[in-house]
Length: 567
Image 1 (cartoon, one colour):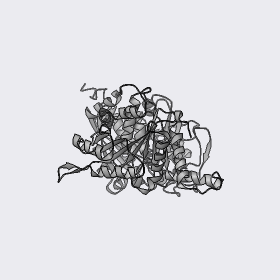
Image 2: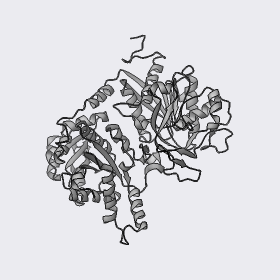
Image 3: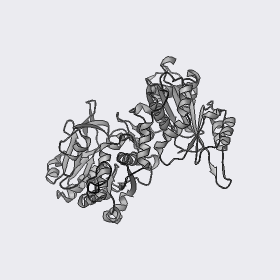
């Protein structure tokens, strides 16, 4: 255990009443304000499910799997964190009950507990505290979010661990922020505080007294209700914070800052010597201004396999919006199920669209719809952006319909295909230089090509034009790759390989020459994981600009958003 002087002050974030209140966004927004005050901030998520990580969980149930630089497959809340703060996170920042118990049982098998009876307290809670220390060390302040809702049996070990940390460290090193719901009952015309009172009572019954309440409601909390909540929950009135529904999540930092939430944290955790007196939120003001005052608008079709779940492509949707923010363009997303493309045809569903994005996915369901989508974009010269499976669909389209390779497919979907233009990757070199190998019998969890890896971009290509440099790093999550045996045939058919791995063994990006198509680009990596509202990502910014130009009839646009002719 670290000495008290070296322990990072932590704000623990819990949730009550109902799930999906926005703990992750709230925690990330507070972190953004603290960072704007000059503090070095990190964030962490403690998830109560027994899976070791979300890597094998269904997107329909859990939403997207977010990937960090070191290749950890994590909860999507880490995506919120990285979009709001500048700190790059790792596998240390995402802990599940499964990981905790796996570590404890491994120690027991080795004999680390010297034959003692292994119990939730102290062994499981000690492991949780060890993980928190490992993830937060070296920062001025950390925010640690506990998943689930207070009262869930699954989250009790995490709550017990953070209760112990407050006792061990004191209130100037451990602070509790609890997010609750204040429902509005239309029939009575009133906001009801009773659910919040009961939620805090539940929290206090396990030994945790919140220092701050973040009250989620449809409208601002009146002073009377604020005083009532403070009285019944033993929380200072100034620490009862109103968290209303906002039309733009990037307005939340300013909203919370206006209620001095960051100052409550600075004061209790004694961060005055490290924090600046004021928060510089100018970057967030610019983001809100650009998104609230657009000069243009485009409609992007996202053709995927999991579109019925709003969080399955969370980072993709946000990255598209970021690309629009960078050029004051409102991006309207039209989510389309790839199986519907197979049934109704690409022309019927994609007519009038300004740009088409095909994101990642696994398995053969809906893959042919993705191939038809890529074909439609190619033949009708609609801007096309393929990501991971979207790149593989584009390669299969060109193989079948341009290169004349009948029956071409990915071996993921057809092991007997006569032309396996996409195949299982069996060996590759990691960022650290180690060789990793996989085969058909490997476990599904954690066995993909994962994490940040560098690639070399070919000069003179659209990709090089967008990035502005020859070597870039992007995060990966996939098992299948472009089959190198078909490089020459595909290039002869007009497909341009615009980026490859640093050892030249893996195809990273493909595109169509701009003489044949105004904007057709696909990448094996997941660039959406490195997009933020303050900087965007060059591929998404370029794609949205291409969609705007397509909408404008192919006219080039200047920085003001007007066509060159109109300007």
